[in-house]
Image 1: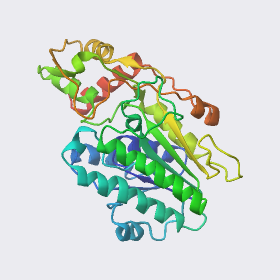
Image 2 (image 1 turned 135 degrees about the horizontal axis):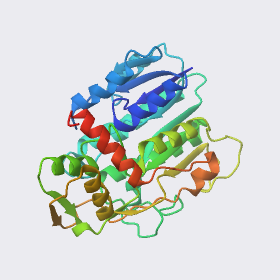
Image 3 (image 1 turned 45 degrees about the horizontal axis):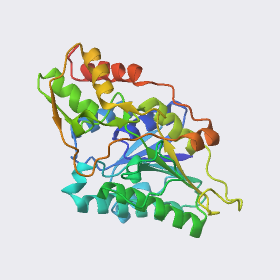
Image 4 (image 1 turned 135 degrees about the vertical axis):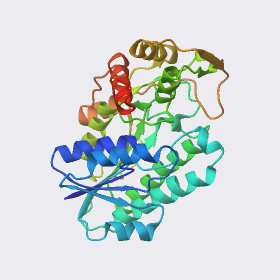
Length: 332
């Protein structure tokens, strides 16, 4: 059996592929290696995967349907973990067409590939906590309304959920959407706050702290995230006619996947300073367009479904990231 992982050179995709390979799965990884952030970092992640007997990499843009089909021709695909997407809230303000192409057309292409694949078993795909928009009900629950996005990125992720619901209903194709909450850890993304702050502090540059520091995030360590991703992959929704929480009988579930702890941004910075042994110079700024003040995941449904229980607090996870970051940049 082959598992396809899209966005395999990305942060979560790389770690997911690592875990699948470690348990003996055959993995085909897809990525177009775009330059949204460092291509060298993406290639370094791939370097950790390539050479393993059960791993094959295909450089392909899944928003090109014919190229996607050609790349996977002959592979006996049973499951897909679709983590590839155009990420980033602020980038979507200035590059909207990229989001439509990758997140909408790309998601449709993946579903079309899956539904025309004989014996296909399960599509797990990445949604985002951004779909909650300006929601002030805490913690965020999958029962909350999500029809008021505050960024185009969030709107595309909500659209993906709706398209998946439609395909699950029409074609009875099992799908699971995961709303990720601020994932961090080794091999993380350079556009995320933890990386940006670490880089600036080590360089003696000030960090920009938005909303004057009055922000909270449900920081979720990468190892916990991957445990949840693979746990859902192994447990596809049953098409047994039962009515789900959204009132549908389609084999499609959407879960929050987070740490179930909303941490102050200022507390995260304190832990980072202690890990680096260096204080940050802070420039406090207003809230940025498209951003939200707080995220906090209600993970009860995912816990009930697969026993998901994150185990890594930020005072453990952030030092692990710092250790990796310094080693990666040869600063130890």
